[in-house]
Image 1 (cartoon, rainbow, N blue to C red):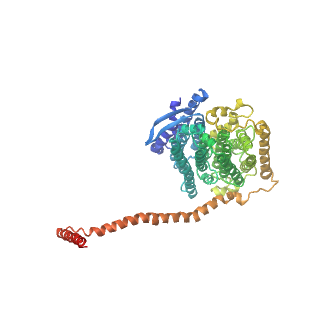
Image 2: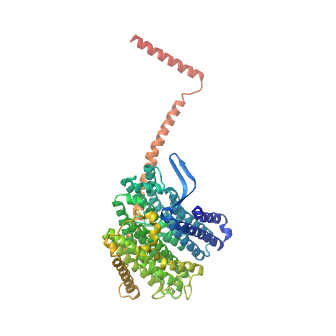
Image 3: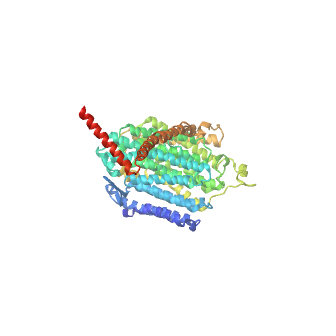
Length: 636
């Protein structure tokens, strides 16, 4: 079945091309349903490839499908080749699976939009690019998908481009990601100049065998991490992701839950042998940046009032958790949390979209409250997502977060404390969100006039096509942890599946105190989550304490504003100065040389009159001058 691997990206690509030509003729909802069928078809093919690989011995679970020779340039020969192995198939499974649910949800959410078919064209193109990213056999094919998802994120975030905020958010995402892309490109150049190849298998084999020097491995790993910081929204390049909420909610779910933001985690796991071969400070840097990002975003989320902004900063925080795992050598735990996060965060984003839809496009949580009775399915599924991300057993997020904390404790106690504080804040701000939206006093009638409504302004439940994905994702958020339970090695299904990719690079903590006392750490995680939930209930449900929501947290520690001032002030002056030097010094030197040569040529050209007598006179003068010279030399 691996011979059918090319069908995975082919289906959404065909969908995008068909919608480009016939989308408007197909109209609503046929164009949306057709677009939804494409990732569904890719998901079915992925399942067949998965079972094919699963039936093979562990060491044979890797197949390369070469489509054609893409780039033969001198000693550089790059194939457009796809790689099917446990990691790429795992990524493809939840990209196509959750992508299919988001497509179906969008059919209902985008109802009535004048650019309905164009939206689904972009969604299909996004899924195609994401599949090329994770299925690429070499860095350049991955980079093709990497740039594709960057372009599609710009189209989707700024989809409602008539709103200035959406247009600005799209440009911010595009520019910020270009900064990170510099790192990926430089890492490719360095890998090729060192090894003469950019194939993953060759680079990782060189790292395993010691053919890749530690200094080179460190440089490649950190450069790739720069790219990952851009795509996966780590400090200091995170600032595009909260603004990306300006796009339609299905975009938020697709980009921030299951696909684009996980690209950096995937790339670092794919290149884990290189990271393993690098100097010790490289993974430490990754762990510290991940922990700092997780804690920073969690503190900001506690003071946000936009229902989607809370989830956006939550995504940044959870991505920080994943990089904390990567830096601690816990690659399986990082992928485990990536998968469970895709389940519950897609659920939460789609749930927030259902609330926004039912509230007539209201996003301020201060204008909601008591929606559980009017939107029961949305409320129940959203609450399941809340319990999963808060780390309440037996929901999926508890198991993956606990495994990360286990490895972090064995690696660095200080970062473990940071992870615990982040977990407490996560439970706190997510409980705050649930209370403000679904419990307490109903506040929507107080703001009915803001929506042009007269009299009673009653929110409503979403249509069934939007609720079906919520129910499926809620189920996955409950049972998803079963793929990697901590009780015995026999229950480490994900670890056994990913072993060919991660086994040699994974940190070994079997002899540490943390491993032998993991149930104590598990209990600590439960207590921390419980404290966070109870604290939020005491503040927002019971009103026993005053809410602490300082302006500095609401404004994200003024980081975004500071970055804008820096770029708009000294940054703009610096760039204008560079542009002046380029125009006047660099271009001036080039253009000045050309002007000097042209003027000299123009002066010399005047001597070429075209008259024979003038040329004869010049020759006579020259002859006399030469003769006089020789006579003078003879006399002397």
